[in-house]
Amino acid sequence: MVFSEIIGQKELVKSLKELVDNNRVPHALLFSEEPGYGALSLVLALTQYLFCKTRRALASGDDTWVIKGLFGDEPTSLPKGDGCQVCSSCIKIRNLTHPDFHFLFPINTTQLVEKGKKVAIDQYYEIFRSLVNSNVYFKEQELYNAMELENKMGLIGVNEAAWLINKLSFTPYEGGNKVVLVMFPERMNAEAANKLLKSIEEPTSNTYFFMVTHNQNAILKTIRSRCRLIEVPPIEKEELQNAIIQKYKIEPQEALEWARCSQGSMGKAIELIDQSEEEKANFEEFTQLFKIAAQGDLVQMIALSQELAKLSKERQKQFCKNSLKLLRQLYLYKLGSGDLAYSNPGQVEEIEQISKGLPIDFFEKGYSIFNKTIEHIQQNVNAKMNFCNMCNSLYINLV
Picture (cartoon, rainbow, N blue to C red):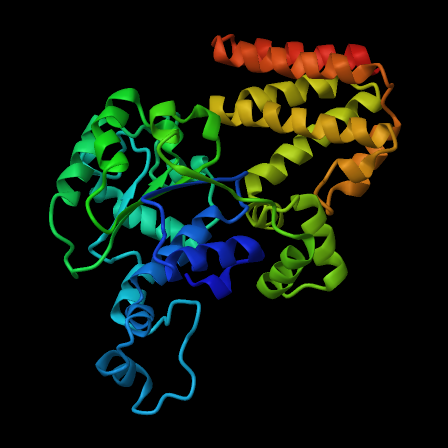
């Protein structure tokens, strides 16, 4: 990725270019963002610019073989302020295959590698590359889904730290920079952090650590204090609108609605527009609950509870979490503040209609009902009893 491909973030892009051009890139940068703001795209563009052979040749005043070989004997236009995209370094960084570009991210045992045995992190690199290439705005859970971790959380442990230290002990394969991309450093445990501390604090020459976090407060202080923090802001609405138009070929007004409800996150926009079948099913089940309650049909409510009880435990929890989010949207529409709900444009009409039939004192009770259901799921309460109780409680408070 190059800087010209980044959505918005013009001030940040300008600052990052200047750091490279002035040879003042800090040894450790921590990019903190809400999911989907574009921190990873900034890191990838920064890394490509840092490695770009054409940029380095121009900066050193060398316009001989590199420039002529790539752009002809008398190039009329050379790339300025961005990666050239044609030198071998740019191509390798773009493909995430450069031997001096290393990745560290949370992992766990999975059936995808060595029959569930935990192995060196580079065995997961192909999965990571595929995810980045398909969606550079991915969230932590999407990484775990790609690795098929099921219900487990990922971790950056001492084995991963030791593996990285060993890799960094070698001289650069191509005689230049070495860059480590650390995704979700908040998942690094204390033992791993202690092992990496010296490498981060006193790295070898031309070695850089670029970290991307979605929760900077959860990062160990020993790591966080040794990085220069870069707060990635939301993407400007107009820039986000244009990116949505370009990606989905839709009308400007519709793209503006998606941009508005995405709250500055391209990742959120992609998630909403490419809504999964599971998310659609969650919405349909949620609205069905309220429609049946409005009809006063307790028998159908109980029948629906039994269908929900048949779902997997993770799917049950996801349904309840989505219900809490939708309940908030209903409440805002009830208060006449629908603009603050940031609802999926395709769902606004139905949400607005349901909200009209709900009493204002229901919402606090509704939150309690769904939260209690989640608590019971975690306590392994019988699913049929749990969801029967949930539907019965909703019915009592709605009819």
